[in-house]
Length: 147
Image 1: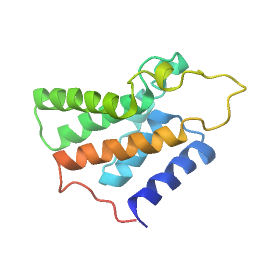
Image 2: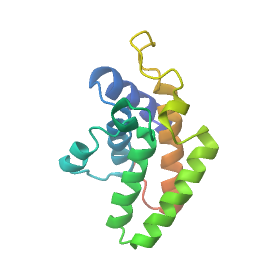
Image 3: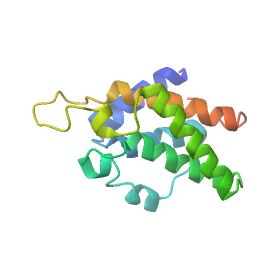
């Protein structure tokens, strides 16, 4: 299976079957791509991060990606300053690629009951692809994907 298909299938699974939000979804998929285990406490801490608990603040796709960069960077023994710099570069690139870092701007219709289900699936796929490519550029040896 190629990585594009893997990402699409996992996004569909985590959103439709597991009913996870975007932060958990991106953390789970990145951990699969890079063969990196994420402790349950990290996932617990991410519980309300999707737009600040649906408030519409920073997008959970950004938050999950930044968390993963921090976790993965620490596992590779990067300094705090290096991780901070990478997170800043990531945020700039994400904003340029996807248009914003803010949930209410990326999803201007908000979270209304009348919204179609899984409104963020295409954006999630784009965000995971962008994040995986970003990490792969920093750590070309890192990608463990082999599904």
